[in-house]
Image (cartoon, rainbow, N blue to C red; front, side, top):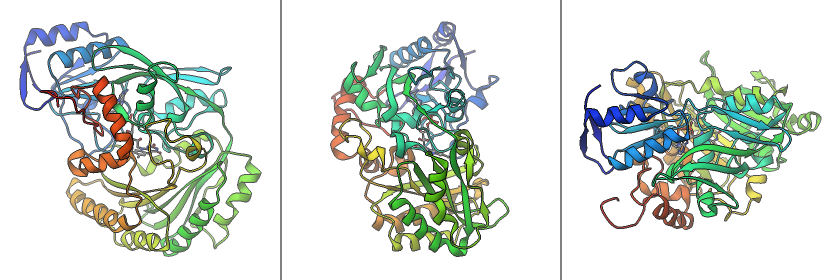
Amino acid sequence: MGEQRVTMNTGGEAVLGEAVVADFRASLGGQLLWAGEAGYEEARKVWNGMIDRHPALIARCAGAADVLRCVNFARAHHLLVAVRGGGHNVAGNAVCDGGLMIDLSGRKAVRVDPVRRTARAEPGLTWGEFDRETQAFGLATTGGQISTTGIAGVTLGGGWGWLGRKYGLACDNLLSLDIVTADGKLLTASASENEELFWGVRGGGGNFGVVTSFEYRLHPVGPVLGGIVAYPFAMAKEVLRRYRDLTRTAPDELAADAVLITMPDGTPVAGIAVCYCGPIAEGERVLRPLRAFGPPLMDQLGPTSYIAVQKMIDAFYPPGIQNYWKASFLQELSDEAIDTTIAYCAKLPSPMCHAVIEDQLGGAVSRVDPGVTAFNHRDVQYSFLSLGVCTDPAEAMPCMQWARALWEAMQPFSSGGVYVNYLGREADEGTERIRAAYGSEKYQRLVALKNTYDPSNLFRLNQNIKPTLTGEHR
Ligand SMILES: Cc1cc2nc3c(=O)[nH]c(=O)nc-3n(C[C@H](O)[C@H](O)[C@H](O)COP(=O)(O)OP(=O)(O)OC[C@H]3O[C@@H](n4cnc5c(N)ncnc54)[C@H](O)[C@@H]3O)c2cc1C
């Protein structure tokens, strides 16, 4: 133990004396780590290997009381704060350089109430861990499309996934949450308690406090019809057009992603990953066009468990490698947009770079009154992702350039908006893109909420809503 050099919330550095740090450590039910201690290196790693930050202190919280202690300590000492849920965010906002990382990744309790069809869940869970518990009762709620993403960041940014078109976003299924706010209060937010805060946390990200518990509505789910069908890359145009035809008229039960990607054996493919969460026979009828144009290279489509579908694309997104993403919503999936995507994916700088078109919106998501949550963009259907991915950091620059160039080329087809959870670092994206993610009208309302709950911008390591109150704190 010794004194700690720390980064402050408003920039600049300070030194925390040995006794201050020792008292803080002794106050915690969980562990406090700093550089050089066993566990520190592992605890500071997040999913995106491009992020390499060193917090001065990592508090592995044992529960809400520890979160409260961390928030009070950070506020008292003006520390830069990062909050970690699943640690999956591509921007790496779960970890900071020099400040305090409030690490909730060990908090994984779930309590399912099969009668009321609800689940109370802690913020360190991944969707795979959450689903394992709820599916034991034949239940599920909308989560991200892969099992390793954290429930916390996904839900706070909106949260779409295989069940979203049928049951709404993850945030639409949120009944309440417990949150420690910047002034050190533990509040419950729901439709009947702290209603404006409840509006803001459903799409406004981690801007308003540290969530210690989420309560979700569950639905009977499974088995489902799911899997990946892949064709040779040479057929990409036809595959993407068929994907468009399928998704334009798809029933709510169907969610589908189209991807131009290279398989681990080096074969470039045009693939479609689907989940149909209704009666299997009906799903087979709906998905028949996917198989009706020549023999696919790979056809995994079949009845399966929801848990299996949640894991079907995990292997394409391993932790610890270099990831640079650019995203936009599309106005529509025009022939020109399809041709542009194919042209760039035909010239990859590295085999793991790829493009994804997601059809995870529409359906029930579009029928929720847009004013009810801070999540924006309920009127769009397709999300587009250009992913510069590689294992070797030396290749990262060309991959980033490729991802940016494809994204630029797709801008004529963009709605102008972007999903807040797909944004990269603020320094790279710029504040305008953050506003575009929230939408200008909702951004103003979110700023008012930020002024109420976090006027000093203690929670700034996220897609940050800047408070407009005067003073030193901005
Ligand atoms: C491979 C991959 C697939 C993805 N697929 C989907 C998908 O299908 N659907 C979808 O909607 N999104 C998807 N995402 C995006 C995902 O929503 C974000 O990456 C999300 O932020 C991850 O949440 P997390 O808890 O794992 O992340 P973290 O990195 O831990 O946190 C993300 C943000 O939330 C804040 N935060 C975390 N926990 C808390 C908390 N308890 N209280 C307050 N703030 C908190 C953090 O400070 C940070 O700003 C995907 C991302 C990746 C990398």
